[in-house]
Length: 147
Image 1 (cartoon, rainbow, N blue to C red):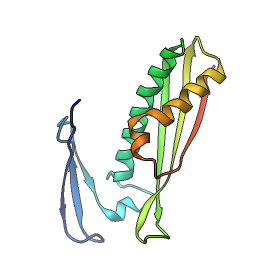
Image 2 (cartoon, helix red, strand yellow; image 1 turned 90 degrees about the vertical axis):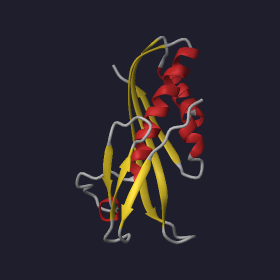
Image 3 (cartoon, one colour; image 1 turned 90 degrees about the horizontal axis):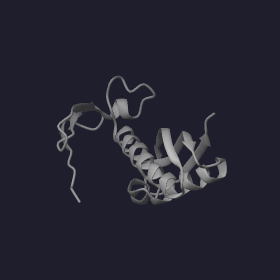
Image 4 (tube, rainbow, N blue to C red; image 1 turned 60 degrees about the vertical axis):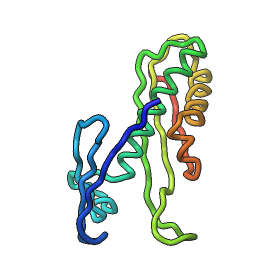
């Protein structure tokens, strides 16, 4: 299996510095990061580690769920997955930590009822490699069929 890479170039202090995250393996982009925008409600055109984790988690979960649906005898016609990753203070160790992840999926699936879909989604939440990597963070799931 392949290894994927990213690189960050950072200049300055945490409070006044900024950096650029490069998606090195795919070469599809370089994105601005800074702590002030990371900790603000408005990202101001910058990304953050939390947004990049959310992107990775939503993509991984969607792939795993599509596999689970197929294994259960269903056909995943479309899946809409979002991941919300929260950052907050780490009261025990100091600094910051990921305080929670919410996965939300809405699916158009033939061959599975609501209960079957939810079971496949729960298994995807537990089985996708990104979920496994994030076991120290509480992950909640909101899964439902559309239509």
